[in-house]
Amino acid sequence: MRGNPYSILRGGWKALGTQAIVWDEYLTGPFGLIAQYSLLKEHEVEKMFTLKSGKLPSADVKNIIFFVRPRLELMDIIAENVFSEDKMHSSRDFHILFVPRRSMLCEQRLKEQGVLASFVNIDEYILDLIPYDGDLLSMEYESAFRECYLENDQTSLYHTAKGLMTLQALYGTIPQIYGKGDCARHVANMMLRMKREFAGSQNQILPVFDTLLLLDRNIDLLTPLATQLTYEGLIDEIYGITNGYVKLPPEKFAQKKQGEASKDLPTESKKLQLNSAEELYAEIRDKNFNAVGAALSKKAKIISAAFEERHNAKTVGEIKQFVSQLPHMQAARSSLANHTSIAELIKDITTSEAFFENLTVEQEFMTGVDTDKVNTYIEDCIAQKDPLIKILRLMCMQSVCNNGLKQKVFEYYKREILQTYGYEHILTLNNLEKASLLKLQTSSRNNYPTIRKTLKLWMEDANEQNPNDISYVYSGYAPLSVRLTQVLARPGWRSIEEVLKLLPGPHFEERQQLPAGLHKKRQQGENRTTLVFFLGGVSYAEIAALRFLSQMEDSGMEYIIATTKLLNGTTWIKSLMDRPESQIS
Image (cartoon, rainbow, N blue to C red; front, top):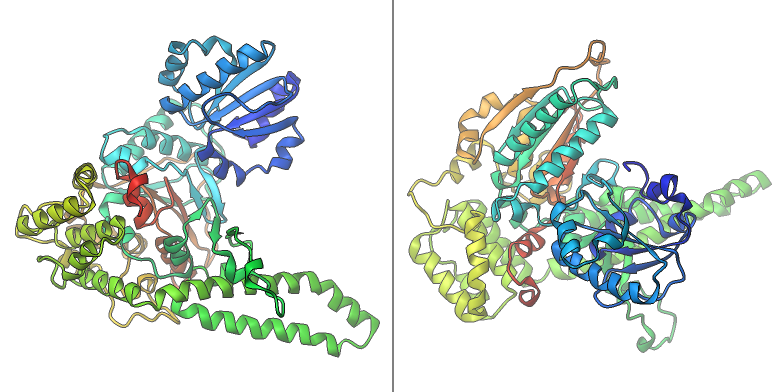
């Protein structure tokens, strides 16, 4: 079951005959990264549908396979589907695959609904860590942070531990485990327990990773709230990147011909895939947005010089060589056109007064300016009925940078939000309090300035064009999570023992015994590899900062990033809202 996504459609199930897959909509994106429809078609998958209530669309197939997350509300929809099918096609076989684990509760619900006996197969498809890029893995477990910090549900931590055990089975036991936070401690404990349970089956694989670093999201609540200022981070902030794809307004991408009327412009969003397989994107994704324009114009000159070469091709051999390079050059030109259009779209926003005002307030909070009083910009935003999420991000930021808000400030914000946006938001405000994003100041001591100074979280005059520090990703602010990662590599956490005590949860180190003969003999100048696992989510700016550390000549460390979810401030706050659909506007 751990192999290719279609392994369940061959092997033991091959004799089943024609199949239709009914997808839990949330799973289609992650599965799309590892199996295209064409691949499934080769394995007798005739039709694919999205799971919806009512009856299934018609399909002339022998088997219906449901691919779903273990959610009770989805079981009710499946029951409806099965009932309607049973009436029409009594000869059909039903199968259900839970992703990533089977659930007794869900099976019980199917039994209560009277359809459990209709299923020929009930199994699980273990999809823990999905490769999003060469150095990035995500579980895309959207509710992990909410479950851990609001609902005290540790299911996602169990899945994380299982995923890490699978990774070790494939890439060798990771000798050193470091961690910070309560969730990190839980995951490490579960991993060590699972290792003891499988003590007999030690794998004889030379370890790929030297170190595993487990970080709780709640040790650094500030970073995801801030507006990301890398190219990829801004694409995500403004348009949202979902499963490696972004949907963009079409007008900038239309090939306008001379004298063509504007009414013929496309109306459907332009969907682009974003990953490092595209040469130009790999080059500019992690740059501060202010450095992207220069990189694009440099690329444009290189491409146009390459096309000019055709005039110098005189001999048949030279012409042949030029023709063989054409497809690559045309792909590069098309890629340049796309990213120039995206950069123009982003620039329209980043040069606006509204963006600048918002960023100024964020940077004031990060540097400790006026964090203890009602902020006039937040007041104005509420008065103008700006999007609620924007206001909540700023309020949470002020609270985190001030170790909580003074009672008077807290009550004032709360009252203004409830009166302006509606009293149903009391639930959301309670959730943010529970998650420590928004809280009352209980002591006059604010630890944030100490943490900021000791870890150099604010760097004046950050170099955006040719960065020499990770703070370039937020134009001055160095993500706390990444700074901790950097210090762990050199000089080590013992040097910041006092600061670690100011952050929530324990910090720890564990060593896993390797079988004899599997200790790495390091070559001169060979980098060490650390897997950094963010429990509760990670932002693209943090990923960019870790990639920057990997590329630093003297770092001697390569980082691979894993997480429960790729997020930004908006999607994160949204996951903590009750009834978020009605609150986006």
